[in-house]
Image 1 (cartoon, rainbow, N blue to C red):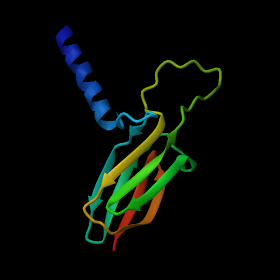
Image 2 (image 1 turned 135 degrees about the vertical axis):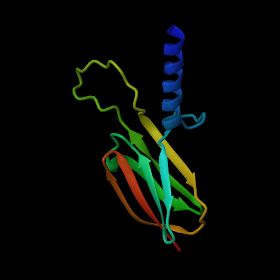
Image 3 (image 1 turned 120 degrees about the vertical axis):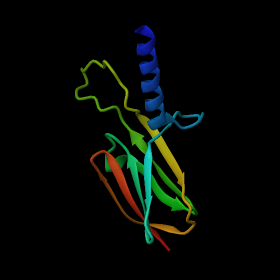
Length: 125
């Protein structure tokens, strides 16, 4: 029974690291949000999971050559300055995600931040 509990905890830890993993060993610690990428004949659609990140916290949103770059910062959302912290599992601090795409000529045609996700439409040129 104890062995099964340990295996389940290990699996849960692996899943969390898969979705919210630190971005390398940079001078300032960063995390990489998970993304979904879909493609149609005319566009590429990208969903970036950014729980608790307001639009004004996005510091970079651009396409350079064949790479989409999304960067910003998620602050710890303390409801009250006197609140005691019991658990902090959602990543916070600086984040940056670079996604190399199969098309070298893309332009951001639209973006929307809602429901904890950034939805991007990249038009193929």
